[in-house]
Length: 383
Ligand code: GLA
Image (tube, rainbow, N blue to C red; front, side, top):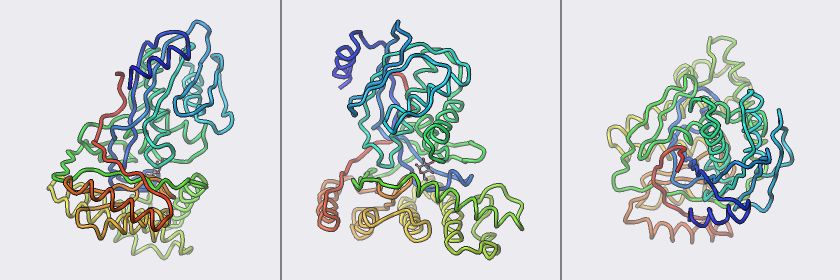
């Protein structure tokens, strides 16, 4: 595969590729819609992701090209950039913008991207794209950013350049992921532990709804602002900075402060989900996979009924998983509104699971899902 990409690079740019980088996508095992509320999440990197092949050019131009998309783009090195349309190259452009806006020295590069992640499906294809170019620029131009700087810089691209008010989880997982480990990350302090993720006789299955995600960004931003409203209401009596600063008990005693019932439901999800992450981390450490699976199902139920970011497609998948004896736990992963679900599936049942869920989903929804299995991979690297 890499050899083919190198040939494509040479054909495209008339010179050999000099360096190759890879950043993975991620799944979040549990802790959904928590990161922008200052709580705990548990993502891990997958082995699918974005490859970047690159070589400097003498023209002082950034040339962007992708195996996945027909559109290419080029621009000279400038002191700043702004978003142009909605195409894929805005993500790397936003990263370069943050480097130059921060007065970092960069020079022209030929850049070829290739992603084997389903795009826009909740597996952080955009964070993977942002982090791979940020890591490459930092390495090639010896910019001196730490990995954590790169996480913060790429999150700013998403928030300010692209315009989605997302939290820090995706960029963090894509950067710091470790093989066979989940990251238990405190999104407020940014302290994390890489927790051994022993799935015993289970494998990690990813089921893509293949639902086109319309309106996902505006719905996401709506949830972020509902949480801000909930926080403001609670702050009239509680001295807290984030919704995740309180546990379920404190929430129960103060939830009357949140007058809007919808906003109250959103806060309930966040606070209970944050508690579930603690329980899930303990269950994983104690090798209690059944308990972990039960918490995954509970997380999904809450995202479905309290946070309302699921949908018929994801619910069909998770409902099927509840009745299928080879599944230990399942839930939607990522922002929701379509995208992917994950499931812990007994290894010896995976083939049958894959076929059965494809049949069931196709009959119910009218088109097929895609089913993958993934190892837990490492974060961004130069290959
Ligand atoms: C998206 C965002 C993340 C996080 C998840 C939901 O993936 O990019 O920051 O909020 O949704 O947990």
